Length: 136
Image (cartoon, rainbow, N blue to C red):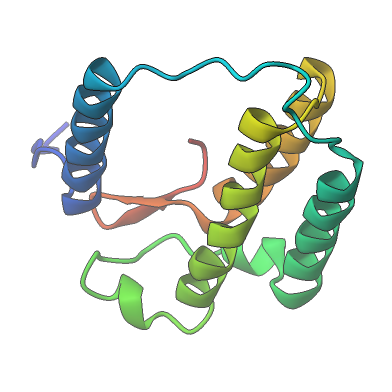
C-alpha cells in the first residue's frame, strides 16, 4: 500500500473547532433543565419536520447525492446538487434540535425522526480527503 496519510480535511478541522467551541461554552453555561409544564406539545413540530423531510426528498434525489463521491473542499461550494442540498438540511436539523429541547417528544419518536434526518445527512455526505463520505 502506497497511501500517504494527508491528515484531517479542512471540513474535519472546522468541525473539530466547532465541537471544541461548543464544549467550552457548555462547560461555562450548563444546560438548564426545562420544567415539563413549560415544554410545548410536539405534534405540530413533528408534522412540520415530516414536511421538511418530504420536501427535501422530493427536491433532491438521494440516489444522485449518494453517487457524488469525488469532490474537493474547494469544489464543494459550487456543486450544483450537493451544495443546495447541504443548505436545505439546515432548517431540518434546527427543527430537530427544537423538538428535542423544547417539546414533550418521547425519546423513541425523537430517535425515529433523528434517523430520518441522518438518512438525508448521509446522502449529502461529508468531504474527507477529496472523497464524499456517505457513512457518517
